[in-house]
Length: 399
Image (tube, rainbow, N blue to C red; front, side, top):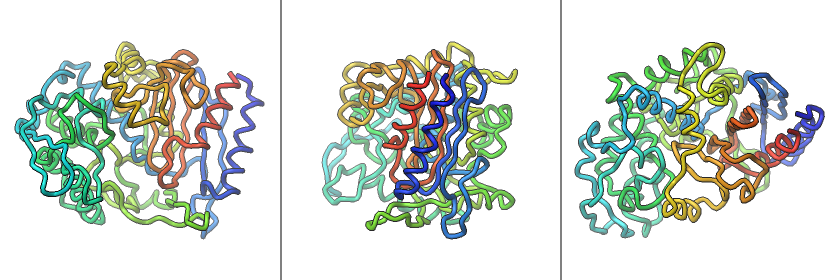
């Protein structure tokens, strides 16, 4: 790797901060389990002039999903989870799943003719989305939107709605298509969190700590930030109509804004916080085919499966329609997987996999080049965006 070429990343990040595209950001790059470069720029707290630093803690939002995927794979390796099993085997209310493709609140759901499978949850082919609020939106998405608004209020504390409660409530909401016949990004990973609880007999957070977080010594990763670490938690910002950084302090998807108390709803799709070094431990574990520093979390074949899993051709077409910004990728096990690097919108390698989050955190695992990338930031409505692609281009053209 051309390390001097990586220094361009600093210039790109500082330009993004100067242009008010992001308040603060950091990036960590590892290859062959060794740190190759670290960069940071901007502020975690603009008003108080607190820099975005290496120990800054960020809300992961959807970058929680790869952790949930690994938790599911642990159960799979132990023979406790089968991708073709019906979800109702563990969560009985899904036996009576309804489907409705109509819009508006007067639509009439019908019984689903195809059961919801574990693999549907992992691949976002369940029919559940992230809610909708226009009056003519699909009926089930309107009800999902109602649930999310209730979760947002509940998240402000102390909170009464549990992980299992959310899954049971969703079981009574009609899906927008027969499971396994379409793609829609949504609350599937939150149902998976409840399923993991049911199979393991543990709270979702306890299962993660015992099987992933504690073994990897990920001390900054949890569903809340304790009082003694609150000074390390970054603010969240949004870009105002005047193209300025504006503080954002509202709950979203049932996730509390200040992360200051242990939530009842431990979201498998969006609930975790972490620091860049903590999350790199997780990413490097995957890059090293399931093991790091003598600690094995997954078996090599399982990680190979994560890097090669694909949607069926029919479902791939549905994914391509829904997620055009991820051209060249498929989506399985809560992560993108590169299947046609020439069609991707940033330089990459086939079978590179990972995911991002609503506030812009990003992770990438490349088994072929033994390369790991983690990027953290806290700006609303980001995901994989311009800055992500620019940084990734610099990394890959430096190999």
